[in-house]
Image (cartoon, rainbow, N blue to C red; front, side):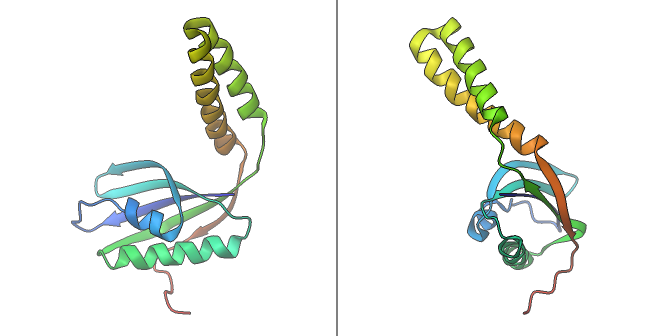
Length: 141
């Protein structure tokens, strides 16, 4: 699995690019807009770096049609190792706290929430930087 962080400069366009991200195959996790710069944290479910690069090129083409562009750090690519320690610890702790405060229903919800937070922990701390893609990208092949 790969984590890609996009920084997009929107030239007067106030729409977000979540639809284009999904169309290119990315799973958006986090979105932030600050002074005309949009930052997206996404996941791409593949083990092939070439597929990720093709999806980045597709996304760049889609946002260029909207009049948006990127800078020197348009796309940062991280390889996410598939670890289970965060999911196990989060699920166990969530189940324990959920059962303590909410009984059986709390156990179920606590387990699911703990697994989700554990997955985010694994993504954040089990990553290595693979590459950086600059703008402009050559859109023709």
